[in-house]
Length: 332
Image 1 (cartoon, rainbow, N blue to C red):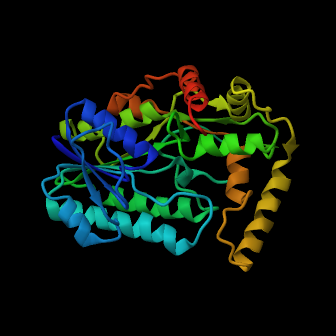
Image 2: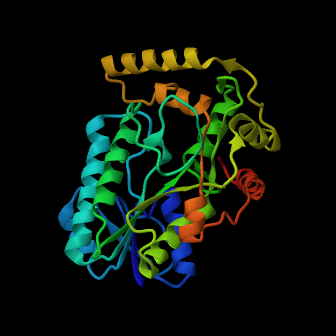
C-alpha cells in the first residue's frame, strides 16, 4: 500500500481518513465534486469531479493501488434517481475504474442501516441479512452498492466493506449541528419509551478503521470479501447520550415524548404530503427517522477486532469532551 485515493475526501469522514493516511506517510489524493481546503494536509492532490463520470475516474485512478470509497449521497429524503445515480451507478463506476487502472484494494463505506428494519437489533453480527423493508432511498441504494462491491472482490481487486454507525466528533457537519439546532428551538422529542440502545462511532475511530482495513487488505486475504460493523464497542442509551451533550452546553434536555406509533404514522403522512406536492425540503419526521430514534440498533465488532486489529482508541467520554470543547470554541 503506497498510493491511496479517497473518494468523498472533502466530507467529514473523508477529511479524517486523509489526516490519518498522511500521518502514516502514505501518498494521498482526494476525489470530490468541488475543490476543498487541504491546509491541514499539504501535498494531498485533489481531483474535482463526479463519480458518475467513468472517464474522470479512469484518469484519477492512474497509478493508485488503494481506493477508500466514501463518496455517497446521504439523507432521509430526496429523489430515488439521485440516490441511485451516486450510490449505485457511482459505485459501479468506481469498481470499473479500479479494474481498468489495476487498483488492488478497495475499502467501501456502507451503513448498518442496510440491515435495519422496524425491529430492535441488539448485538447482531455481519451474518444478519439485508432488510426486506427499506424505509428510505439512501439505505436501499447503499444495500445495492454494497452488494456490487462484495461481488467485485477477486484476486486482483480485494474488497472490504465497513459499516460505521452514527459517526460524530469535532468538525461534524450533520449529526451534532442538527441536534444543537433542534435543541435551541426546543423541537426534539423522545420517540418511543426512551430506553433504546444504539451504537455510535467517534470520528477518529472510524477513520482508523478505514486505514486499518486498507492496510490489512495488502497484508492478508482475511478481510477480502467481508463486511465489518464499526462502532465504539459499547452501545449508549440514545437519549441519555444526547442529553449529556445538552447539559454540558447549557441547552434544555429532551424531556417531551412521542410514542413510536404516532411518530411513525406522522412520518408516513408527511412523506405522502411531501411526495404529492413535490417538496424538496427534508421533512422533520419520516418513517425511517422514527424507527432510528425509537428502536435499539447496536452491533458486534468482534470480527473487526479479530480481522482488522480494530479497537476504538478514543472513548465515548473523551469524545464528548472533545465535541463540547469544539462547540464552545466555534460558531455552531
